[in-house]
Image (cartoon, rainbow, N blue to C red; front, top):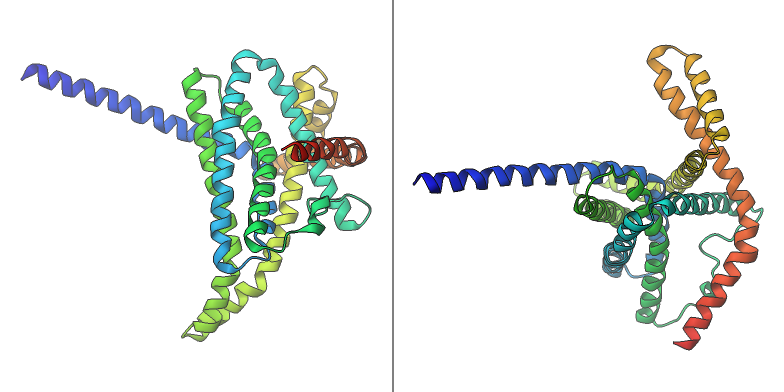
Length: 327
């Protein structure tokens, strides 16, 4: 009996340790996921366009298919690659992170340039966009594949940013945290996309079938509000990309020993914080620093637009089309 009680006590102790480890993994995964806010918001802002033009009953199945592809990208390809990089070439993480930051700056600046009509082709002007197949099933297949390819790039940014934000620990803890962050981010992104895409259908149903005047008015309000919600999401996503991208590049330069720009933004943010009362100091410093990071990100992105459009994009498309023809 005493042996059985001792065994149960050991099992309880192991269960407590396991529960604490799971709690640590979830907590670290949530914190690390928050660091990737810019890329996450961009992912959520970009995805709804892939279900535009389809019947309402096909929207959620397409989003589910893209979500599964996104999770596959993160867990089967990017997670092992990230862990291997962290184990065997940790020196490469900062340059890769800066490369991802440059891509965020490029994307954000391109969206702004496209919006004001001074250049930038955005996501929509891919050469194949004007030659979409007529067959709905084939069109759905092409759209889903295109969304999963776009997600791979965004997921690579997200996973690299998340990996850099994970506190140093053992291999299995890092693997579990990164996997947890991948699952959390995928659920947040595609759960949000599903709610956004179906919100207008919900509003329409409330407006047409609601028994109360309040329900009908609320439904009409949702339908009218959704275009503005999507526009707001696009603006917030663009601002977040420039802020996060600029911050990543500036911090990367500091890590590599080029800290002049980092000291400049920090000193100006501190000066702005000391110009207000102590109760507002933290918020003003953070806002000033984020704004300066965003302005730097916009400037860097504008410089990268011609490089991306005239050099990198043609090379990428040439390789992609050659692979497609070979296949």
